[in-house]
Length: 98
Image (cartoon, rainbow, N blue to C red):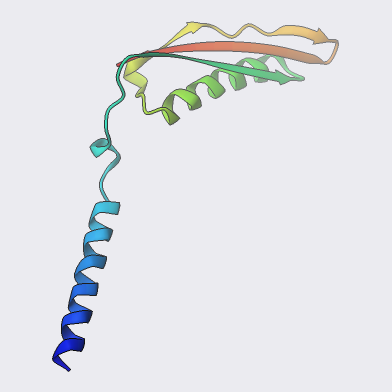
């Protein structure tokens, strides 16, 4: 019975440690360094949606790479170009410095 109690205690302690490590906040992750450029491209039937989708794409890439909003700035504003009478294309660029 003593062996069973020790085995269960060790297993529970290891499980608690894993839960604690897994629950670390995102701010505890390693910070990114250097400069990076993210480009978002989009196609849409609306010039407004094309522009906003291109920006959102570039922004999402920057956030996924670990940069914060304070570290990033828009370096190429999206401008929609008409491809066909019903299709618009946009491209946006965000540069991040850490």
